[in-house]
Image (cartoon, rainbow, N blue to C red; front, side, top):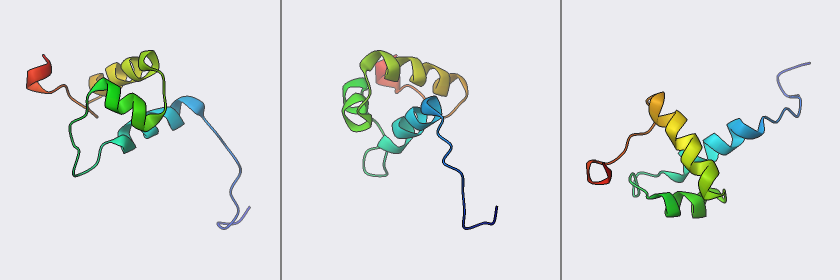
Length: 67
């Protein structure tokens, strides 16, 4: 397989986590759970659980006003 060809691999959990991370932008670096759900098109329970993992791994952090 050369560099121009790539297999069609899909890892659903990774795709979802990246959708959450990509919801954050320079103009909107802080988002609440509802905004993340809307932008990522994911259920609230999924976003909540994935945010917990992303926070534990240091990719996101809760705002001080959120506790």
